[in-house]
Amino acid sequence: MTARSCLPYPHPCLRIPAHPVAEITDEIRAIWADMVDTMDAMPGYGLAAVQIGIPQSLAVVDCSDQRGQAILMANPQILHASGQFREHEEASPNLPGVSAVVRRPRAVTVRFLNADNQIEDRDFVNLWATSVQHQIDHLAGKMFFDHLSAVKRKMLITRAEKLRKRL
Image 1 (cartoon, helix red, strand yellow):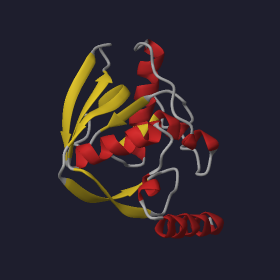
Image 2: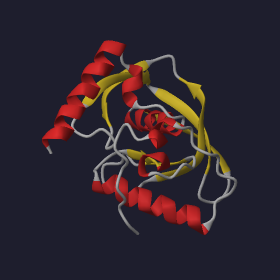
Image 3: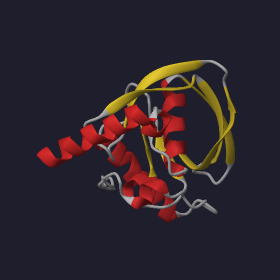
């Protein structure tokens, strides 16, 4: 498969909610394969299809030490979020060169359509939970910096724009 380019922020596709996936087809499997290749090439812990310009509700996450353990999800939705939180530094290939600490629930239960066309409920904890929530945000048209205060968000975006102009 192929690593694809990520859309640069503020591309409008990054702010539009993704379309639900009706069923898993060979075309969807091929998109997932490209997404895994793209995620591994970054390197990153996850990727949502909208980040590469595909407006479908597809995400991949791999927080394993050795890689090769990607979880492929269509239409992921959070069923339950823990009352305990954790902070983690987050970034996005759509806004390269900047990152910010984001506070999210430490654990989540997510329902999604898996590669076998089955509805699956799965628990994610720590980094896995953070990455899954980050991807679900992307599928809803949100970016990690939307969790920051208006002042911090403006500073982060301004810094990213300055970095982009230097390239």
